[in-house]
Image (tube, rainbow, N blue to C red; front, side, top):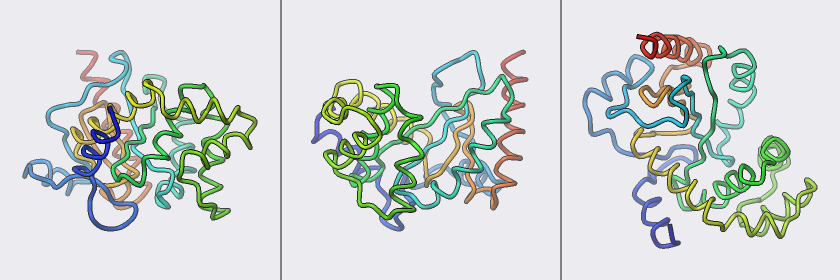
Amino acid sequence: MNKREFLNVSARLALVGGSAAAGLSLTNAAYAQSASQGYAIVDPPQQTLDSNSVEVLEFFWFGCPHCFAFEPAINEWVKNKPDYVSFVRSAPPLNPNWEGHSRFFYAAEQLGVTEQVFEQLFDAIHKDRRRLSRPKDLAAFAGEMGIDKEQFLKTMDSFSVNSGIKRAVLLAQGSRVTGVPSLLINGRYMTSPSMAGSYEKTFEILDRLAAEEKARMEI
């Protein structure tokens, strides 16, 4: 995906409004109606990475204060999740201004250093109030974490990172993401704290739908 294609896709997905809100208009009445119950049915279902597990995927953005606030809660849930659930994250640039953070995330994944930099970047942005969005600044930040910054910068512009971003954008589009953080359950359901009304309700819905998906897959 070249720069023009990236910006065109991202622009179509961007929602004019608050810094944490980004996504698509709801054009399906059934989707909107189910969302009133704290979750939404994703139709058609989206493909998951592993068909042998129930996948819970979090859409997020490093610059989102709501995502930062949600981190302790989702991390605690991951520690106690059922063995049949796999947890993954997706960082689609739903606004062109998010591109640098998306590239940072997928470069870290490609280099196998996600755990080394993930929470650190969140903290740097939201606790230390550092302005980290340009690729060269993000690569320099990775360097502070003991990672080769030149290699990191090169990886941020690699084919594998471009492919990861393209998949993330298409998945967000297919899932009708309306904000971050959002949780996609096995490609078939979407919930979030804003949809559910609270963290507690979010995890109640998440656990119930994950269990239902497990049962469905065993039929």
